[in-house]
Image (cartoon, rainbow, N blue to C red; front, side):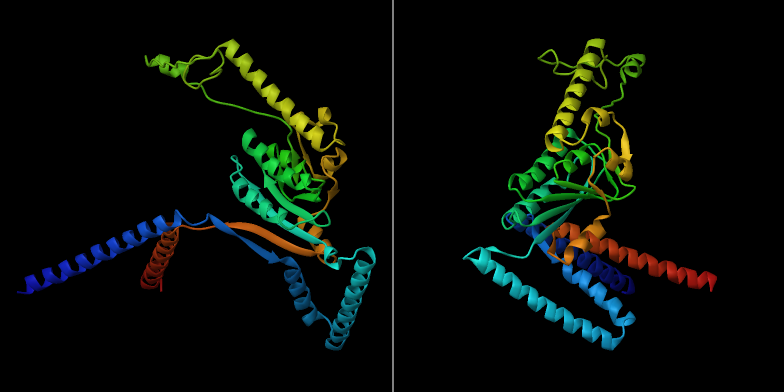
Length: 353
């Protein structure tokens, strides 16, 4: 009887686990079906002025004398009131519609590029949102980091930034770490490029490389066949025998791509001596300034801090929706991590206390 009892208890536990697992799978499947009809994500906006002011006020509350702080607050309110009155008067003087005159707005977004420029999809959503509201009196700031990547991917990303210039809205690109190759292709679209002192700019060059396993296959009596229609459908291949003619055509294609890259920089940044800098070299911030690849040396943080006193600064990003499966995966991983850490803690107490 005891055996039957134990077996029944075990069976009940196993059944509970199976039912629970099935319920989770059903929930994930249902959520997946729903998300097929949902949007990919949403735009989030944060006003950075409040962040900077909170930091400043927090420091002042500790460092500055309380009476002096009250006087500063009173003076600030008086000054703000006077500025609003002045702006209103100027608006009435310059135009019948005072609402057309507004305080400058700065829209900030971030682009962290990988080899495929994968964030371009998010960038296009952000730029579309900004262009629905921004005017030539405003400014767009892109904090850009990229070591470069595929030509067509970064060409498309650069064309997204060109949309801002086409609307005559001032565009600034800030580079704190690196904007190489395709990254600089994007940066050169800007009206102004701001670089940190030791940020890396360039190279303005094109590279392609691939291994070839033909001799290895031949050594082991492995035949490889590739059928094409068109003389240059394939120039170099990883498994076939490459020819001098194929190599020559491949190099010609690289040179043509490099020419297009240089022409793109000339059309967007005429002050640069492209022939002098399009050698595949890289420049640190100060050297890039001397080569006119950038316009000033400053970190993006300081650039935005300098703006916030005279403009409303908004950080805009596109936040992708996480699928329920991903959320559950994160939750399960976190729970497993907690259990393991607790177990290790108990083990540590047991053997080392």
